[in-house]
Image (spheres, rainbow, N blue to C red):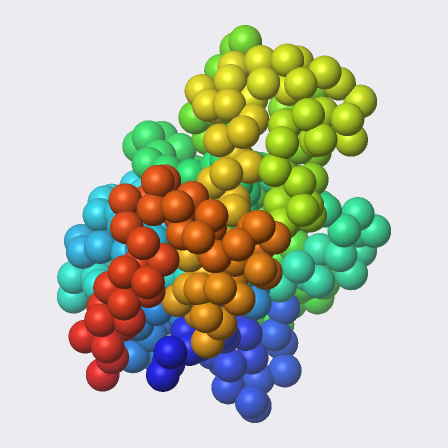
Length: 299
């Protein structure tokens, strides 16, 4: 491919003269004015939360398109591909933070990804908040803005505490957490399964392989995933493989044959059949169609 999707760090967006680079909170309108050319597909090295309070348009995250609505919130983990086309009057808040913002004081390397808010395997990156919750989130974001814009004592500690409150508040509102038939223990097992998928999806494709790592039976694993998400364990694994295939197709110069090898498929033909069966198009067609969209979106 002639183009690669760019990857931005917080430093890239703030500029080289900025020294506080682990956390940023801004009004969305200010961010969009500061970065009017960021509507093309790109990725981040940081986590991002956006709350829309008004406006319109569309945005896509990992090849799924969403229409902008007031009270909508999206959360993205590092590495996800996204783009947007917002209406001129789009308003809201944007929060960017590095994983190190928490791991500097927390020794759990999975602390942030332990929240379902940022789960790219089974969670939705976009959710609609009810009016009451949106109001609570907006109040908290305004407090974060005030704290961020001043140089008070223990500024980082206060922002870290408010960010954790925001993540917990939003995680509690996710639809899957509202299902009474899923216990806290089962959700913990599910998150362990999701982390294992992230670590092993290139080598392990069968639910029984993950069940062994979790010390439960394949039937138990399937029942847990079905109760929480309404899909099978095999579907979760397959969706992660497909997502990686799409990312490699649009974000690298690897040939389809090389991508098949990267994902540990037996051969190129098997990978092509797998991809077309679950997406409706061949890998070559997917890559060409995305490249055309990328070219039309470039300034």
